[in-house]
Length: 148
Image 1: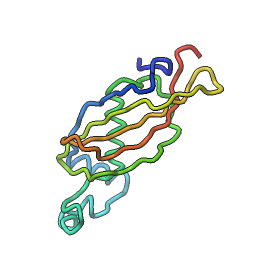
Image 2: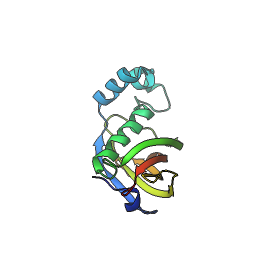
Image 3: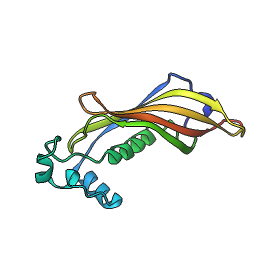
Image 4: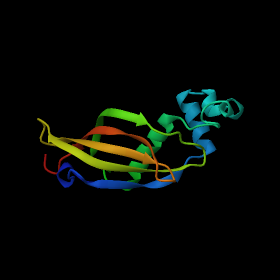
């Protein structure tokens, strides 16, 4: 079981494991999302863009972050729902072959009118293999309380 609302403290930081972005990830995400923009799917086209080569979909990397966060177990069985993604920024491109990892910091907690849950605001960041932030934003979530 993951951490409950009461277990979380403002300032806590939870790092995720890392994973490498593969060609298969990009191809599958294009198929699932329907986003076949040539900057993601056409190497020759992408060479003529500011990126110089194909770049991973920003939302692919965001989706990967959610999976990496799940692997930490921090919110396993205690995260009820996402309420909002705030101020999400795509800072640097992520390329096939890059290895990304995430980080979650607890920014804010507030009780709700329902005794079985609380709102937790988290700053999330994604870093590449050089430790450079490539994405960041805030997730607002409902988290189970231990005694509700």
